[in-house]
Image (cartoon, rainbow, N blue to C red):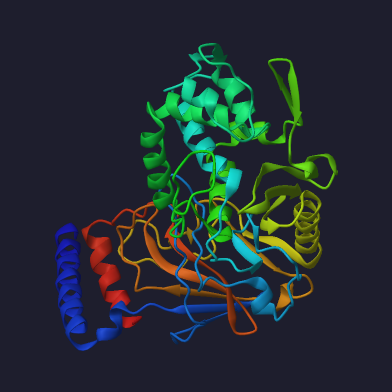
Length: 435
């Protein structure tokens, strides 16, 4: 009886192998993927590849999940047919950092002088040096003559005296001290020139394609420029990559050498959820402000450059944040590690692959239009094991009025090992009939 069963199994395997070869030769659709479209609570499966125009979601370097936007990235006001706020500033940008979506903007790619907003890149590199234990907060350094002589806003450090890294960071961020900034750059990189090279390298890694730095402080120079779009990326990196140092940006004041200076970000005291980031001002740049706010676990970031006065930069920033919170809402589509879809996988030890985004998926939509958003998932091809965790196998788009609100990659959330020989053979037969 055992021998008879063994022979029967061998016959099935041989037939399965022959069927697999035959169907691979005669049916080219065996490797095709599918499109899944859902609106609200209903979901349908279709073989059509028709979908909204793709918008490839560019990403920054592997150290962060901050999205890099460009001129083709959807803007919510444009998708929804809404009129954004009108201002007299040179340029502005409003982004929902929770979902990574642009809410609205004005002259997003105009090259502007960033003034002391430059110090956010300096801070990013200093925070990285702290994380890598190349410097320590309590470490004391000797003030150089170059740092001491630096003009503009100052912390008032004295040449050849000792000052801690922690105090220098407060002097740079809270007091916007150019002297503290130069001293930090020299301490981290050995020289200002080397540090500036690191700033530009970091900007390139972050995808800040319209940015170039010539010094760590933001003093005016022809080749020192950026855009409000690039500054929004930088601000997100500072917040997401270095959360344990973010408290520096909300410190209301700092006293050094018996000189007390208040944080120049006046929005910190208005009780509107603003907890950072940085101000800037030169005659060329005008009055600038990057403001980050958090309300109900949702973070918005506004970037304003070229205001005529301190009052205007603060009022425009507050108006943008209030407008963003009042007119748009973010909903979590899938939590971190939770699948968006679980399609059939072939020749694996399990029959379904969990697909989604490792950090979860949130979508920002205009208030009142939440139920009108379509979710379109596209699988690149038939899923065949083995599949590795993190492997990109498709995309998901969120569509409103036929226009893409947001696109995300569909990644494998858990490894799908390859099945044994008999399991693979059996799936080859089944998949041929399910093409």
